[in-house]
View 1 (cartoon, rainbow, N blue to C red):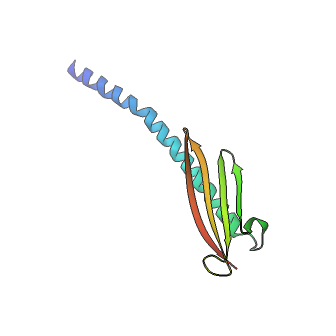
View 2: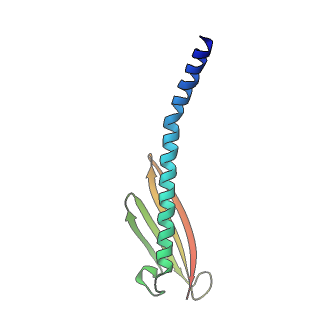
View 3: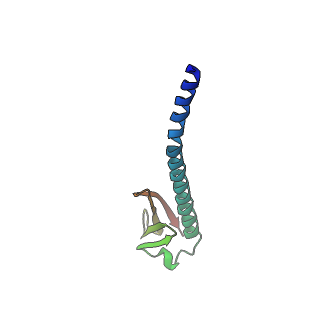
Length: 108
């Protein structure tokens, strides 16, 4: 009887962890998707012509599903002839704003 009670308490304790694990899994999926979006966007930008309108020195943004991608291009940073791109992907996760950011430098 004692073993059965002990087993039931353990089982109920484990059952309370399932929602927490589910939320953590969802958060990890959201972060992974955002990282993949950031990396693919940077890859796309680095493969464009240096004079492409999407690489003009200013702030740019677009939405991709529930995520917002914003990036800033700066000319002649860190040295003349280069462009620095700072990119941020933002999304909402359970009422909290999350983001991932990347930076890269393009040269002619």
